[in-house]
Length: 508
Image (cartoon, rainbow, N blue to C red; front, top):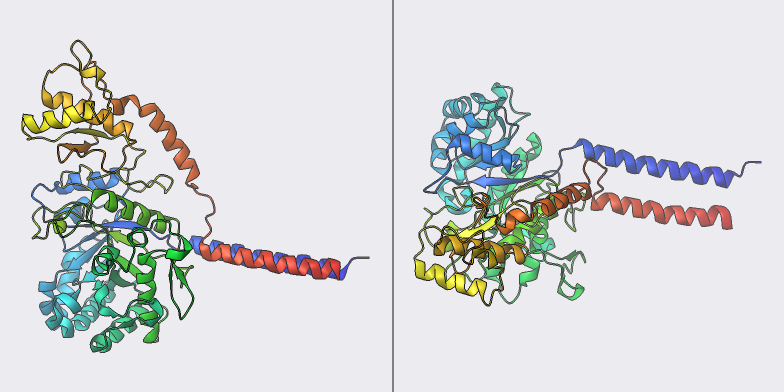
């Protein structure tokens, strides 16, 4: 005779599994969190629009944010499947916020004229208006509402979302996150903004920079937590009100935004991180703006998003992030760090190589990619010779191929020999951050410097790297099922309940 407890057990288990995988399927049906890049144009040698778009495609970058509306870039993006957020500059807010007709003209000229060939997905209205142009605050919501009405009139309001990027400084008392709240002097406008975002199912754009949190709180906020480095339990930040544990500053900043919204009774608006990054170079007052730290932060940030890690408060929600920024902007005003937030120089040469192996195909300037270290153009012979002597001496690079009679001796120049030696050292060090610098004498390139019978060390490693790429792609999960932290918790709960029910059904 059939055991009723046995039957009940399997019905219960089947139901739980159905709930789990229905949730997984629902999550997979939603847009995956992504990493995009901001593109600033304050650079002296920026790529032409067509070359820029080709570069974005080669780097597998699928989401970009522009700080204005660049007609040439938008035209070049047509039919590429690259999604773009365009922006209303702060100096246009007055005109748009004062006139519905001006807002309608702006949408027609800068959005509708390019869509759908160019996949415009959002309009960022201004940039950090509350903190950088507080006098324009009363115009913000009229501008947003007018632009939204223009999108509705063009039947684009469901495809294109409107929001405004905000500085993290609009949130006061951000740690512990549970005590965070919006600056009360801004509450009336922020409340209107959040109600609009909730009504239109649009995200709250926030510019979140753990770099600045660390710099303003040195000695209190550990560098490891700011860079997403693994930390011991003793270095985790604990919110005493919720007992939630924070291993990194970024998640704490995100949750401070969610708690601030909750204090205004808004719980259905998702945060989009419109800017985050770390500078690779700074002046004497910015000692933590280094290539190593920038590489560490941005590499770990990318992994954090791609792995759908969520936050302690919302493990089921992973915010998409736009890295600030794609290119260094050498025309920016001091301090020095302002010009050095880019992943690449404006001519598309990498500033450093991200370590994101196994995190999909995003950004091909990964350590699995073919890159080389060569001498910087324009340096005097004495500086190069000093760097060359160190590389072949204390640096223990293999310089045998640049000796007289060997394959890389010709052309017999300090620059040519230095390039070979630099690449030998760089490859020997596993392309680690900082291994292609030599006090500014070297630079990273994706162009193979080999010539004639002279094969550079980086080229000799291609077959090994190809193998690593294949393995990395297989390890990254491909099209398989990827569970979020929230889904793992559900699975863990099912396992616990199943174990209890098993004991009840068979041992009672």
